[in-house]
Length: 318
Ligand code: FES
Image (cartoon, rainbow, N blue to C red; front, side, top):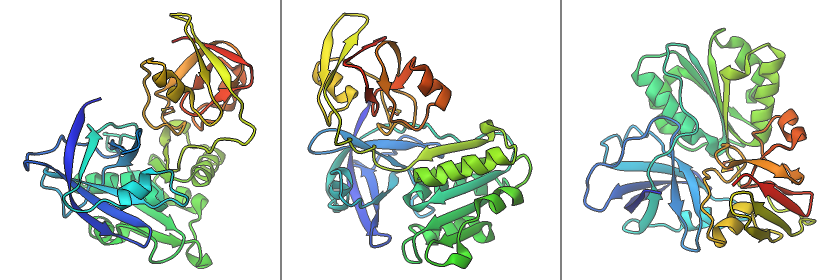
């Protein structure tokens, strides 16, 4: 992974739970460009890292800074508490931008739907669409007024193309079916937020005959919590025969890395598909949100960042 050492320029409280963290290079040199929907991984002091979408904030478009939006999770898995403790002058290590949630490039309109901190990649999409003079509408849902981050830049970017929805004000609540019905017939739909919102948009779109290709999503939650009944199991690598034990509460990726095995991954939430492996023997216990029910039932592939085993051993095509 390309590593960049960056300096915290600003840490701004957007809402009581969300901070905007502005990062710049130590010498003021330009940062790598990032397309809408891209994220970087920020290294945590206790090990591991967390992905954060890059926010195309209109006040930070000089090429020398990146803006991240970080919600303080409760209980924090470590990442968000570390990020919320950052102050100007602190150093952080990040990856180069990666993008699993790209915006389409043709002229079709876009319907953007964000829930909570899922606004971060969606804001960048809206900014790119607005700059290009392309047609879009953005629905932004949150728990209550005062809890929606980045509203000021969004108002500048979107104008009357922004609609806000508050869970505690029933008359404003997001009606997913209505939002889809009002969008142009060829609109590409982007949704980023909690799993329930993504499932609701996908289900409503399917019910309206919208092709799955036109509904694109990025999950914005922590990795699924370990189950109380999780037990240890073994993973055998087909290429070398090496056998690695995965402890309860440990992911297959963590166990493999601890054993010196290089594996590809990105989101670590069962959302991006990058860590997908072919299963040669054994029964996976699927905990991702990316495989279809049919793919899960086939047992032939699995996401090794979150999924576990129902059998005592898995043989993986690694
Ligand atoms: S790393 Fe994204 S699904 Fe596993």
